[in-house]
Length: 473
Image (cartoon, rainbow, N blue to C red; front, side, top):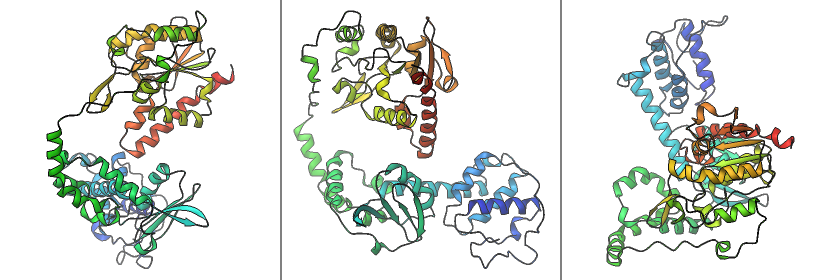
């Protein structure tokens, strides 16, 4: 059975459905990706005719097959068909991890996923010129047929950059508008070193920690075969050789105290007098809040911001590290993602009021880093006073709770985000409507890029529900 190419999943699925419907056993099929080999043995052509009988397979098999088909094993089509053939009579076969057919296909899928991860980790772009414009080109040698499946990740990651990824069997090109897949290339077609090489080497040297050096683990995560394409690879042996000396120096020098956290310049300044009963007066009052212990290690109170008559009020969890230092809500990585999602949803953030359920940053100090900690119930209750007064003064038509902590603060009880999101709710206490969705930091924590893109799309759709409240204001 001839397929259109090495990764022709749709063609394989159509052929497999026909063959299975006509009862052709696995041993009688020869799978090929060459056009001239469209036979799989005498009498083994799929007979022409109508639709084959319907056959339902577990959704997990479709996902598994899509991934395993990217493997370089020439027998992968046969392995998948044999597994599909057995699923007719053994619908729970995929749950038997020790079954030889299941283990083989699962192993192929695992190898493909690992290759996809390695490509994302070890692709390095070099800058060149194309038609007087900057163009970034990378050379990579994947183990499997993963380029086309992986290209959308780089398109999302480097949207504003013109780039090409060259591999021996195919190439991917992004011009800021369209993604194109072309023929393979040679390593000589990729540019040599550029000014970015020094940046990579400087960054790698700065994050290298000799006290945590585990050569075996490093080789497992950064196989030697990828080193020839990594600018930082030239530093690996020197850094390893000097690791023991540097570690001895660190022990001799002893621990270092964390850098003092700079206070926001406005904290020490005398704030302007605000009209009593206004948001400005409430902000000044909250600056001295001592209702819970979070005020002491934090840099400052981070109060809400936005028009005093905003039709929509967004409530997050608590300020993060960057918000704590700058004194403004949603200005860190989650805030930037929030701004982008609002823009895609057609919402102007300057017309909304944005605040947090908890006004001080709760964190754990690890070395020189402050690691976010989820606020507890007592801290949420202590800050409820400030959120209630913000809502009373702004009087929004819609309150959007970003995440479980915000929802708990708003409703006074746990509200599962998954069950409540995407629909308008009664906020209670004489208030208007409420909407629950995820916090943007949840999207940043998702490790799987496909899941992250899907959840981001759902988040934008949730935010689109707020547009009518702005338009009617």
